[in-house]
Image (tube, rainbow, N blue to C red):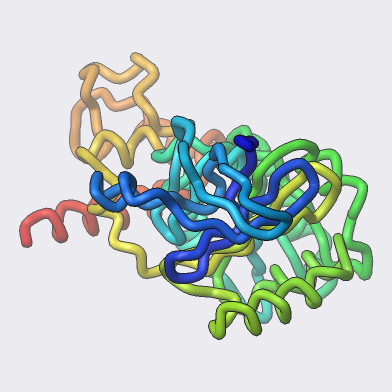
Length: 291
């Protein structure tokens, strides 16, 4: 019997597929290996079912997108968790996440966690500044996990939750669904590995028909691997993408004359920290490209 499903975990050459409310341990047909194609977590697949536990993957449907670390496909949104205290995350690290997901064209929700540790005014200013750029921002850490807000945001979607180490991703996931710790234990025992790897991720049904992938951070990810040219960086900083108001259509907003972005840097229209991040990552890209 052929049935449609989605890969929710991978261990070596075994693929764990959720289909019609059941879970199957599956192997992929040899044709995939012959064509040097590896199924990924998040892939929608057709499986040929042998019994109530085992199956073969016979078809992988076309992916709408995929991300590099870890390899995950068909992502609807990224929930980026950051903190300004314990740990203090630099704004350029926050902007690195935003830049990456802009380039791979995946919508972002920013979650500022541990807000109870910092001044409310700082939290609200952070929220205002990034909402002004078009990002949805959640403030958490007041002893409330805003479960209803997350449930609406994640409804019928595959979401990745990511962010630097120590920002509280697991705490948020445990709050959203107490079974998260149980799943982590089961996955770790099953695959004999920790919950974070650079090769795979695990899809958790955090709410009904709503899946979240808990991913490791990538503050040291080499941006040259997913950037084709320097204009990709410019356009990833949405407020600096060329809107036609500069003199030159290919203006990079650095030393060009009659640059509208440079003219507005001393106003409240642009955040100075965002421009500093933009220059930092542009220089990083140009430096790495030489080698």
